[in-house]
Length: 165
Image 1 (tube, one colour):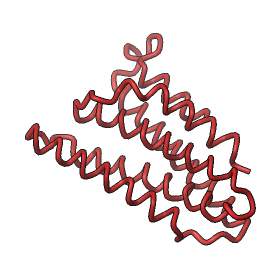
Image 2 (cartoon, one colour):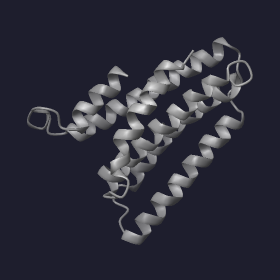
Image 3 (cartoon, helix red, strand yellow):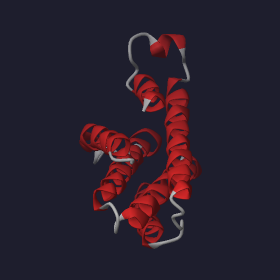
């Protein structure tokens, strides 16, 4: 969560960050990617400690959501005839999908013993969608959903950190 908060400071251009760090967007995006990787590692370790299988319905659900987002993004790029940031967005989508799949898998595997841990999956989806919208806004100039970021992001962070165990 600390790494994500640092990413927030860069992405919102807090204080004098743009003056001090001209590449503030790249730094902020890198911090968010690092946060996703840390969540992947944390939840994967949790799952391994409980001998949960990784490949299950949670992974399938996460991949299906990511494919729907990819289709939406691709259609919009075709409509705008602008693919200048397509591959960077694709890379980011892969990272946030891996995070979502890992946490969905954990929630799916733990559902029978602790159904409330599915809230982790809700948090992962919320974090995934907020970052997807940020990517659409910043990298592709698609501003249709930007107002949702500040609803989805804090909900996702809270659920990911409070309901992990």
